[in-house]
Image (tube, rainbow, N blue to C red):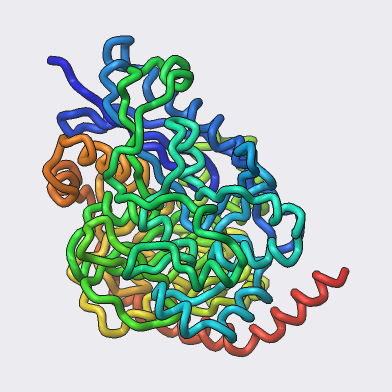
Length: 506
């Protein structure tokens, strides 16, 4: 039997993942290639866009290496996704002006505060979102003030996934969900807002035309087709932001569905038919066009676990293969009782997003005694991320959850999923596929007609492989710990600000 294929290409915060989906709905291969972030100053996070293109080529090559020459020619389409809020500045020669400011960069506290105080009501009216250091509008405002020469050199602006896709098809464009992540786009009119653009003195023609995520936006260019060994008729599909692709791809496509994401950052998201008016939430259109998803997010989720592993379990790299280090830490964590014997971790390793929206918050361990080992601290890290997600969940007091799925790299650790279920007192479903690359492969497949619509696509392919139910006894312990966690924040955040000021002045 002759099969056809589509590729979903997702650029995350740490690397590029490619999923190869076959026309019978089977994922036949995936591949991952990492790239670095740079931290040139406190609270800054930047990346080199040139590395994204190189990672895409390498990851696609790895994902298709099991296909023979004929099968590679049957790659019908490629779709793309990447994080919201990451703008790439291009000069008149379409060359990158400076490194890209990432979504988790926290440098724009002054600009976001000024925009909120002076124009917050109008911005919220147009976008259903409030200024904070995550948004492109705030990044551009900072660049205008601090790098005027670079700013004057801007000829065009693309977003992360659109810059990568540009190198495959040469088309200068974006989708409306991606555009919503800029805080420069009128959500209801679905057009660039003249008012918002005026706040940063940029004209509309700097920004790309806007399409739907399933739209075809050209064919692969000859150079890329030859390099990858695919057909010159391979269609390039628009794609969308990674969170939108993940929420759709994991099967949450109905009002009342929820998603918890345990990745670099942590998200608590709800699918809604009508947006909840809450300025602590971020709001975007869902890939199912009649729906929205609203999101409350913590900056450091799996990134907190990775930080702790690298700093305090370095010795394990001498004993175990890298893929076995996390499972070994989890085995040690399982020996520690819930609550980590009264040890609490605040996961504010690079400030915090919702519900606090405070770039100056600092992480801490509280309650340490001589009895605590590094395994206690490791469990406290996992639980601290869970407390932060519970903090996020409180932004949805009136939501009725029909189903809650958990995705991201952290969802592979069953003990961590159990901790989250216990803290939230929520049954969690683990889907078979949960990556943005999988979600955007379905977008590409729908865009070329494999499926009638997006809901049919995901319902045909997605399934639940495991369910985790909360332990009521553990929930009682965690509820008391969570109260302390909340009080700890309220009583120490001013001290975090003082420490941040000292670090900036030294």
